[in-house]
Image (cartoon, rainbow, N blue to C red):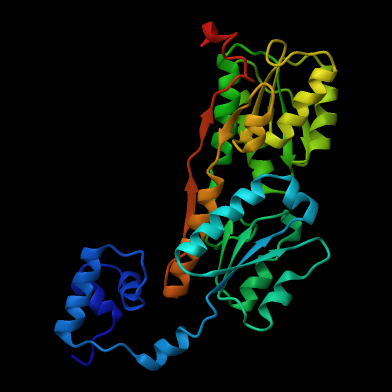
Length: 339
């Protein structure tokens, strides 16, 4: 059957073209029964893949780059990035790929450095500040990549959480507990994560009987100092609850509130976002929105490998659900009757 190709083999086996490609490349992410069905059809039909084309496509380094658009200080002070890196590294180990880490400070040109010699097969990129995007340069380089977090250039494969929904869950929980003057310390407004969490806060307040007071929104940058200063200001405004854009910021906000003579949660309730190590280390422990950061990294590598195995793999935009993790900082024990 000289006219056979991957598409026809896939149709005969009742699987996708990319699955046939995985079987031919001995990829581990294929079930035993599917692998055997595809291999039987290949044996029965005598199908022979185009070895010369396959050789060109397989001329790879097996090295995947993880690009973190952060300064070195931020990388090691914010727990989000080590946890994300763990997930990427775990997937690379699972699929026998080498991981190369690139930390992009403001003055670096990471794309030029890592694409000029064709060293890497592809990239996993953590989305950064909107005005500092390097996605367009990667597109020009023709190297496959997957973004963690919504990218600022449409039409790219990415994985993200529903940040709007997460913020809504947090604010509605505070409303159910009977809080009346709920403030928000935002994340970085130059990121989609910061913007979307603000959208969720506004939505939850506008949809409630409390209404939205823009004076209760103070801008932060996902850093501890910005949260500390914002909490100092809010302590003077008589707010009774704060939704903070990250756990790291929330922990710093609690410190500022305690120093201002307020008790958390007796005087003021706090909810963070991320569910990483600062949530447990905070006193009291943080109620927070859980996002599966380690799983982000792992899944992003799998999405990239799919693109590498089959250039016809369609763009994927995966939105992962979030959940509220209730601990002490929201005052649920003290206000349980209000639920």
